[in-house]
Length: 472
Ligand code: FCB
Image (tube, rainbow, N blue to C red; front, side, top):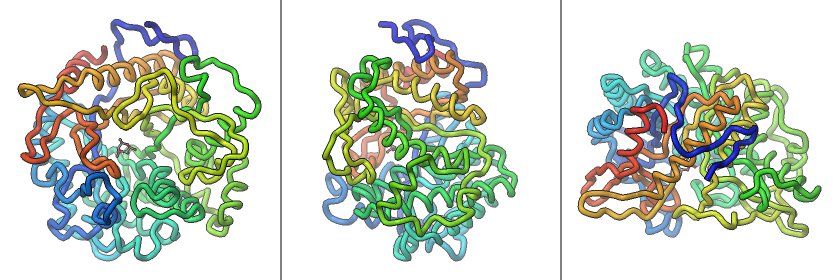
């Protein structure tokens, strides 16, 4: 089947060469893989507390051991080398670096990232460091967490401390990973740490996360960081009809629902970061959900720092339609009168996430139209399936098909003019998938959590070929 991209470029079968210098890599995050939660002076994070609280994570799983990457990073770097990765995106655990959130820097915590970075560079792999992938020091949560303004300032201090140690070798810096998830799953529906359910706290957290982004970006820039990015979870917001027919028209009521959810998911973050303002209508929503007392004059100027790259984490589209009379979803304060819909007629992953590669083309073209000054990078894309190990192999054909479909979508977006500079698969390793624990496997490398044995899945072998060919 041939799928046509937004401006006519096609997601055809057959060859697809990517631009010279296109960056191929993989991504992980500290709490999901490191384990070693008591090692070398690390302090507790909100995810330690949350995962140890009964009933919060499937199977009672915690990140205590995870992939034991803290001890096994050398072997994991060797695997990356085998795959030919050019880039590896990891996150730094704030509670290793500043165990109490603020206060003294724990040099032993930074030593780990020193070893990691040196190992990557020796293997010819470019490190991409993310400073916040959700593991807030518990001490800062005890002081009020992201709903408190002070947390943003502590974040910038921590960011500067990490840059001071690694900045001579790390050129690619991401401030935050997915502030929408941290704010609205952490404080709205409470499915993620710290598990609060308070719409006002969620909006305060989102604002302070973005303030922290701006403060940290400014500190990194002043310290000489070469490339600075913000990573967002982004989806095109579409109606059920647009799942299979991207060009389907919208009723006025559906267009309003789509526009409002796009404001909450996408423009709440892109507009302050890239334009220095909140989108029209947004502050009214915040005002109705606890007020605007936390938004101070000058904040948006701080949030609006020049960034080089917008990191796009894409898994699936967000499908909505008008739903008169419906109450707001707890993860989406401000979503009154909107129905969140399943995507009918397309397959789904083990997470239940619908597989719609054309959504990625649509998203990338829209972002490069709206924000032409910033480069784009796919910082996460991938899928969980119920993998089976058979005779030492994992024939994860559905994962390979997912990745191939999405790479074709990236290729089509580039042909349509989007400035996409690289693709990082989520994830290198099966890992602790937050509230889903270990039962959801996203890795291209299988991890046997009883033995810590790593095994390249068929998708990893396929990805190695894609990298070697710089295309499909
Ligand atoms: C993203 C997270 C990442 C991983 C994937 C599946 O939202 O950034 O840590 O859990 O989803």
